[in-house]
Amino acid sequence: MATRILRPFNLHTISRALGSTGTHQYLSASRISPLRPFSTSFRKYTPPTMTDALVQAAQTRRTIYKLGKNSPVPNSKVEELVNAAILNVPSSFNTQSTRLVVVLREEHEKLWDIAIEAFGGLVSTGAVPEEVFKNQTLPKLQGFRAALGTVLFYEDPAHIKDFQEKFPAFSDKFEPWADHTNAMHQYFLWTALESVGFGANLQHYNPLIDAKVAQQWNLPTEWRLVAQLVFGSPEVEAGEKAQKPIEERVKIFGKL
Ligand SMILES: Cc1cc2nc3c(=O)[nH]c(=O)nc-3n(C[C@H](O)[C@H](O)[C@H](O)COP(=O)(O)O)c2cc1C
Image (tube, rainbow, N blue to C red; front, side):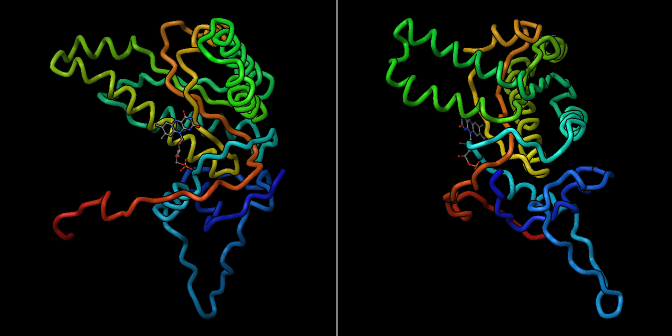
């Protein structure tokens, strides 16, 4: 596995912020930046704040496409993070309409085989030119398949429907709000998985793969697939990211 160059990042603080109480022996040594030495004689150690940890985790989250099958953490950590998303990410009117499905290793490969097969179908009907499929789509999908796992983000419309009936004044708002809450789950897990050493990228092969995926894992067909977060061992560094000027994007009026 390629060693990922560390950005300013302290796993101790990140996992504390995420509520982890365990030791970090599962983390690859290359990911752990040395903790600031503690000395009582001349300087009191000030632990970085939770806010710093949150900002560092946000800075560390990037899109990485080249992913492998090594895991920096045990299965239980992935489960802990997925459960933390479900329990702590807010939803409009507390609808809790988001559903998360995680597929790992062989199950993950089945998911991307489904996507490859679905695209193959589009080639047969002429909707996608064979050259495009062979030179662009297939290598991309095989790249996702080479990763370790995927989180599938769903919305269960049954929960939204109840609220639409109960609050007709907001009826047309519940669907966009459901997408907002779904996106918050995506962002939380993207950031959390990268904070423990995974790389990840976000994909949208819905609705092309929805029916086959529901059939493969016996999921309710009414669940709406919103996004797929592919994760695995980062095999390359994230590329440079151009930033538009902050002044164009942020306005603050008044003072604290
Ligand atoms: C709502 C949303 C949808 C995205 N959809 C895709 C996608 O379908 N395929 C993809 O490769 N990347 C997708 N991305 C990733 C963005 O291209 C990426 O986040 C952006 O270029 C910034 O790079 P960074 O993630 O490294 O900060 C999506 C990101 C967001 C926030």
